[in-house]
Amino acid sequence: MDLRAVKVKIGSVKNITEITAALETFSALKMRKTQKRFNETKEFRITMARILKRLDKSLKENESVFLEKRKVEKILVCVVASDRGFCGPFNLNVLRFASNKVEEIRNEHKNASVEILPIGKKAISYYKKNKENVKREYFGIGDFFEYGQVKEIADFLVASFLDKDFDKIYFIYNGFISSFLQKAKCVELFPLNKSIIENFIEEEIEDEEVEYILEPTSRRILDEAVSKFILYLIYQFVLSANTAEHSARMMAMKSASDNASSILDELRLEYNKARQQNITNEVIEISSTKEAMG
Image (cartoon, rainbow, N blue to C red; front, side, top):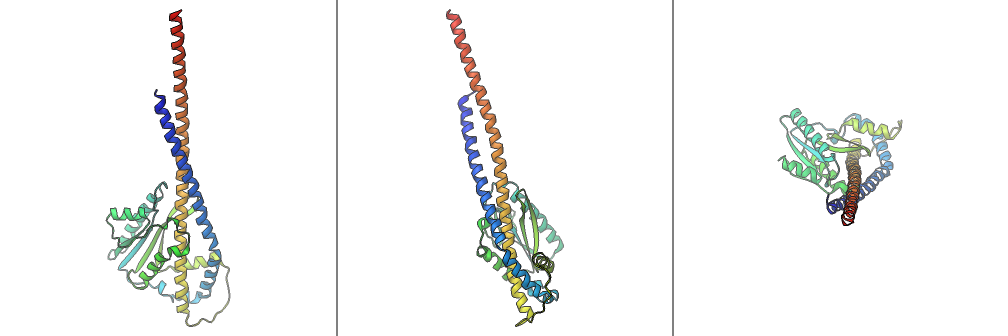
């Protein structure tokens, strides 16, 4: 066996192990950062829940433009994937899930046109390759930790519904559940389902039995509050997708590091065996030569 070739392989695998270990650590740091950002929004969540609770009567009477149901002619489906690879089945799972959902939406609304809004370079390349109806795209969201960084996307979606560019808007992303598990989710963003708001209120605050006088009108205040709530929801979806991406990449790199370490151990064992065999052969040659000369 060529010891030099084995030694070159050991060096290559060792370099790969160092790279994957560094990527694993980097992804873990990013995952913790996005989780921290989510936790820091707790006070905002509670305040928003209280405002919406105070508008409960108007909410029940569907007094917001964001709850308005229309004849469905144009649909927008937003799909969030990552900009980079090395994250295992993360992108494959969400894109496959999105494809199935888009098919379901088309079957449900046969006379409506469906447009895709890909968010993330992997989603953009996937839908362009499949020649879907893509007129707008976003990327660079993998490191978006600040609310202002996703506001452009949120503002576009809100304006698209208010201006009646689209009658329904869906948001598909990989939701973070744990470091070991991410789950693809689909949310009907517009018209906003009241159950989303009601569940949000129930999760954040206890019942408040207080009457309020609302000026100028409850509908106008509700529209403003729901608009801010939607911006917050989109921010949370993106944060969840980012956390899931970094988590998936961390686990993928950990698996790659473990596999590389196993290969490295095997190569070292192979190298030592080959080296030992060469030493043994050299000893045998010396002994044979000595006997022949004696």
